Length: 202
Image (cartoon, rainbow, N blue to C red; front, side, top):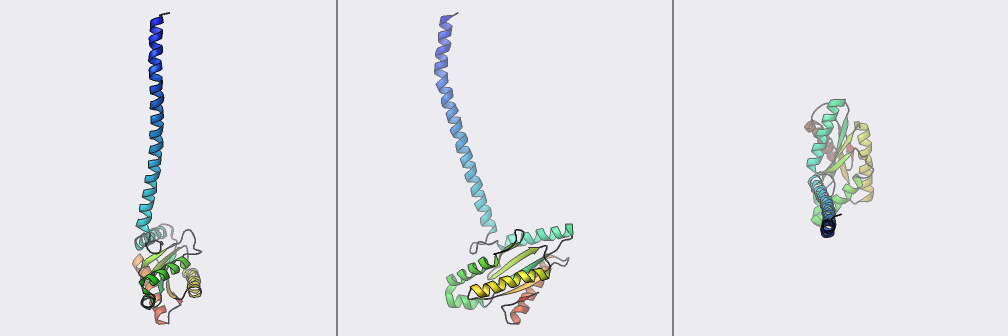
């Protein structure tokens, strides 16, 4: 046995082992830090996505997401032959609300209406702020009669739980485009306004 060689190898081993241990710890710390940064990045992307699809005031879906949802539902109906209905929900006399309570008070009214209208919906339903004091509810696999029942529940709850009322126009998909079904719901809404508001028409 070459004692000198063995001692030299032992010395090298004693020098390199702590270095390898230190490097292993360093690599583990890097992996931990990288995993944490990845989690933060995923969280940031999720927040950005939520900002992109949510209405800033009410926290419901925004107009862009609603129109994308409508386009998806139209495509699904074209593939499977299924149907859907839409409800346009409009807060009655909202200008008077703003004039009486101020814009901050009007904002609170919109948030409260959104909260009430969004209650009890199915996971497949899509609800959000369509613009101003208008909200849109997309109800897949629902005919006009079923949508009118949902709309009436929302109308009654808003009237009972707030100091405002809503008028709701309902329309069922009839094999036409997004603009056509929205136009029919809008026409029903304006008929409801003309009939005295605080009603559901389809």
